[in-house]
Image 1 (cartoon, rainbow, N blue to C red):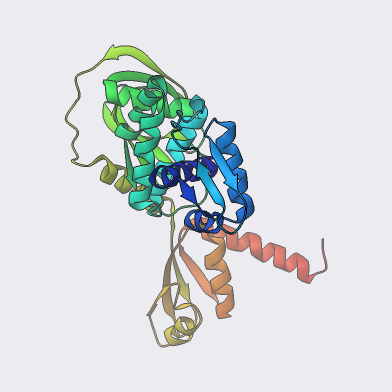
Image 2: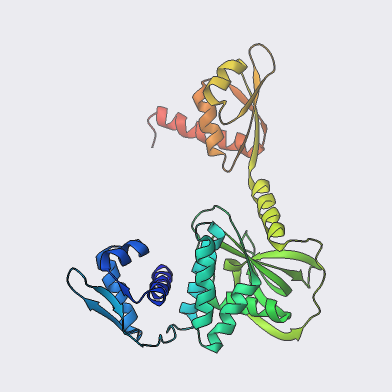
Length: 322
């Protein structure tokens, strides 16, 4: 829906610049097929935009002469979803100036009530390019509640689920919302923990303003986006496994097998130390298995436990057990 709405905004912009468009040229401008273009024109007509179609060599699509463009008709959730989609394009680095212009235009054509909500999302959010896995879009009610609280310097209260799943209630003085690729974060001062924190929006539930205004604090950082990026990077690094093993094989032999993914240092002429950082412990065991040599685990102890589990599984398979 958000992709289609963004394309409709682009289509409206093209008609504002030039009322008559040959069908193929208009489809090329939008990067869509003729069939998709016809569906988009039909959507504009359903919304009240007077677009005529003329067949023939000189035909195409024409915005009716003298027609005034009506406001874009969308509801609250659709408007917020559109703003989120465009803001995410800015964060991914794929939208650039075009996405920024689209976000500005969509705010301008909205009714005043929706314009206030969208303007709060736009003004309270800092996009930060980042590559990550696909994640669900943030809850629109949560996003707009927090954006309005950032704009109005109003304390908020919400339920929060920690990474390990532990729930808690938080009272926060919100400062800024940062979109880190497809993930969205709130930066604010946690009143119960007396510290500046980041909160992932997809882990927030029941966000509500308290009606209590606050005098903005001076954060110990100059850039909210950099604060989020540093916290996320630090969290990702702390969740990685730092592996160190001693391999009963010459360093050059081990490096030839796994040197692209690990650091191999000689200990003696026939042994070496292998170190590796990994998100899971399965990959280090696979790499070590490909070396074809005895090894002992220095750290972490979970790697030794997993190796014993794998050894038992392989022994049972070799014995023909299920």
